[in-house]
Every structure is written in structure tokens, then in C-alpha cells.
Amino acid sequence: MKTETILAAGQGSTLEWAQLSIFIVLFIGVSVMGFVASRWRAGNTLDHLDEWGLGGRKFGGWITWFLVGGDLYTAYTFVAVPALVFGAGALGFYALPYTVILYPIVFLPALRMWSVSRSRGYVTPADFVRGRFGSPTLALLIAITGIVATMPYIALQLAGIEAVLRTMGLNGSGFAGHLPLLVAFVILALYTYRSGLRAPALIAFVKDILIYLVILVAVFYLPAKLGGWSHIFDVSQQKLAAPSPKTGKPSGSIVLGPSNQLQYVTLALGSALALFLYPHSLTGVLASRGRNVIKRNMIALPAYSLLLGLLALLGFVALSAGTKPITNAATGNVDSNTVVPVLFDTQFPSWFAGIAFAAIGIGALVPAAIMSIAAANLWTRNIYKEYFRRNATPAQEAKQAKLASLIVKFGAVAFILFIDPLYSIDLQLIGGVLILQTLPAVAITLYTRWLHRWGLIAGWVVGMAWGVIMLYGIPNPNTGHAHFGGTALPLGNLSIFGWHPFAGSQMQIYPGFVALVANLVVAVVVTVIARRAKVFNGTDDTEPADYHTDEHDRDLRAVGVH
Image 1 (tube, helix red, strand yellow):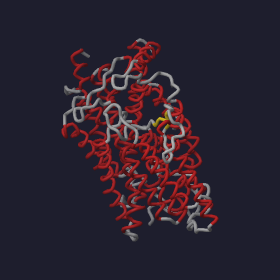
Image 2 (cartoon, one colour):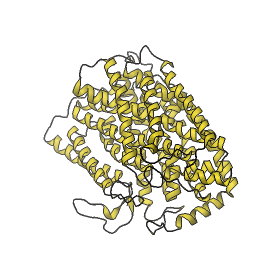
Image 3 (cartoon, one colour):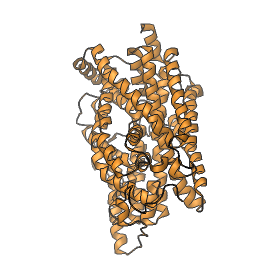
Image 4 (cartoon, one colour):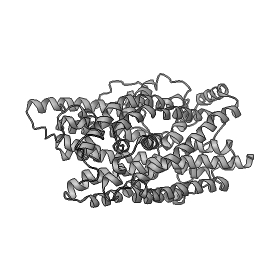
């Protein structure tokens, strides 16, 4: 590629027609697949949440592998993780151990959640909490948390699409700068509305094939072109150690330092615990045909972690190549999401860069669709039906879910327009702080009802409030914003009713982990008080046998019944 073209691409100011044409063709192709997916393995009707929201609860091993993999490994994987490595160094690799420890942690809870949900007809985690404690209030809190926490995660996917479009030259100022994103949003909204979960399940096949192709080429071709991994690491260390013009401090290192080791550990553990709790993660599990499908997937899914590790290394490759992120003409700020797209644009031929950009765009569409469906299911089952229309028919529920899936996407676009964190990955981590507060009610109660429902409610209130307060107090040195600038909290800023137990410490920690600890402590204390006072703990609609139900059991609840 000529130097003039490279400079133009790096500035995001010149339309790259070859790349854009390939991107559009592939994007249209998967969009058509999304629309026709309504007929793929269709049941009698899509006017039921079992069919529209869970694909008929009959996905086998391969479909589930691609669906869950497409759900968990998202634009966050392709764009946000390498961007964090590019800007902060070794800290960005927290995503690798977290996806390694994730599957052993969730293996058994996922099986129990599938069984009880299949037995009782639950569609959402809030359905399970409602049945476990007979508490619409606790279920409402779980539903609201799931919806709100999912919006920034969807926003991260949309940010990935926007970064690709910006790299291809669609980088206008003001509202025009977001117009291509809104077009992609409308397409996503329409085929999700029509086809439900079958659309992302079908598209996930194409998404994974493209991503594997691009990554395998990138991790072999680029290091060879840039002087090998040893040279790449040396150059990356030099550039990360250089003082930042905004802070006067090094931006990072290729190894962890004293200040971010605790953050690394708490990010990895907190993210592993949070991922299972997201409603879209559970949607992929509940759509599976049986427990054996889930078992095989939990064994096979770590293959994606190898993919993630290779992708993260592209952050160092971009540093070595001298990649410069594009300035977002709509906000005036540097868009760190464009690091990998610009790397591909400047190092690959236009035709291959176009394929890579399509892989990123499609890789964002699949999880965004699943996330919006999961959030819509929460609204329909645990808010609309519980508080507005108790006698809603399955068709009315499906109609509400379809409409809600559109509204959730608007909320995600709002995150893009009004929250501009230092790294886009913080959109996911902010959602993680929120969704972690549902762990006691959703995960622990799969095994025991010892925790009292009022203890769970009190713990949720404390954890959520403290988590949001900590996030509010984190500034963004990149944009000058004083609030919601990231998820790295210095221990010296940790305040417990004005008391600073670690005053002066610059060691950082993930706020979600701190908030979860507070949540659990409060839940236990209030539970002890409530039990001693003999406060009624609700009625449990589930039975012990429900947690071991499998697909071939006699008298298994039929799919698609009210």
C-alpha cells in the first residue's frame, strides 16, 4: 500500500472504496441470513418466548458452541482488548486468565440453571429468582440490573462497528459521524425483531470462520513483517515506558507493576464471576438441548481463549508498527478502538483489510443481537408481565420482547453518545460492576436458600450503590471528564463512610470486586437478623429434582407451553 494511502487511512479522512465494498457485501450477506433465519429449524410459531427468545430450546453441540462462543467472544475481543494492551500493556492480558478460569467456575451452576429452567419454563435468571423466593421485588431488581448492565456491553459492540467504519473513512463530525453506526443499528434491530435468537445463531457460523481466518493470518504474517516477536516486545516496552503528554507518567509496561497487580487479579476473578451472570450468557445456555450439550461446550469453549491471547498480542504489534489511532471527528477525542482496524488497514492489502473489517463488524452483530434479546426477555417476563399484564398470552409476551429489543439498542447507542471512557473495554467492565451484584441471588441460590430474600435485597442495594459511587469518582485523564472515566480505583481513594483505610496507596483495584464483597457481607448479616426474627422467606416453587432434569426425562415440560 502506498504511503499516501496509509496516511489517509490513519487519519480516517479518505474513503477506502475497496475495503468498504467488501465490508458492505459481507455485511449485507449476513443481514440477509439474519432475516431468513426465522425459517431455520422453526417451530410452529415465533410468537412465544421459547421460540423467539430461546430458539426452541433445541440447539445441539455445534450450534451452541458457535452461539455461545459468538456471544462471549465479541467486538470486545477483537477491538477492546488489543486497544487496552496498546495503551496500558500487560494489564490488558487479564482477559486471558479470566476466560481460562471461567468455565470451571460456571460448569456446575450452568447445568443446574439449565435443568431448573427447562423443568419450570424459566426464560430469564429473574424468572428463577422469582420462583425460588416468591419475591417479585427481588426478581425486579435482578431484571433491572440485567437490562442496565447489558446496555454498555451492547454499546461496546456498536463501538467496534463504528471504529471499523471510521477507519474506512466514514468519520464525519457531529451527528453525521454517528450516522453509519445508526444504519448498522437499524439493520441489527430489524432482523433481531423478525428472527429472534435464530438470527445470531445462524450468523455465528460466518462470524467465527472469518475471525479465525483473519487472526491466523495476522499472528503469522505481521510478526514476520515487523521483525519478529522479540523486536515487537522491545519496541513496545520502550513506547509504553515513555511519559504520557497528558499525565507525565508511563502509560504502561509489558509486565505488571506494583500498582496494577491487584487490579489484574480482581479484574480477572471479577470478570469470570460476572460473565455467567449476564442475561445473554444464560440465554445461550438455556437455548441448549440438554445437559450433555452444555458439558461438551464447557470443555471446548476454552479454544476461544487461545484466540483471545493471540488477539491481545496485536496490541503490541500495533505499538511496534507505529500505529496511530484515529481522532473521532464527532467528539474530537482519539478513538482507541481504531488501533487494530488501522493496523490492518496499513499492513494488509485493501481486499484483506476489507475481510478483516467485515469480521469485526459481524463479530459485533452476533453478540449485540443476543444481548438485546436477553434484555428484552427480562423486560417481558419480569416487568411487563409481573406488573402490567399478569394474564399476558405467549403471543403478547413475544410482541413485547420484540419491541423491547429495539428499545434496549437505543439505550446502547446512548452509552456511545454520552459516555466516552478512556478505553472502550471499560464499557464492559462498568456493566460487570453492576451485574456482579446479582451473584448472591442468581448463583448462590442455585445451591441453597439459606440467604434470606431481604438479605439479598439489602446486599444488592449496598453493592449497587457503592459500586456506582466508586465508578462515579473515577476520572478520565484522556478527555478531562471527572466521572465514569474507567474502572481502575486507587486503594487510597477507597472510602468507607469517609474513612480511608488505605490512604495514600496508589495500588489499584476493580470496584466491582469491592462492591461484591460488601454485598455478600450485608446479605449475610441481614439474613442472620431476619432468621432470628423468623421473618418469612417466601415460597420456593422449585423441587430438588428440578436441578437435575435432562432432555430425555419422562414428563419433561413441553417447549412452547404457557
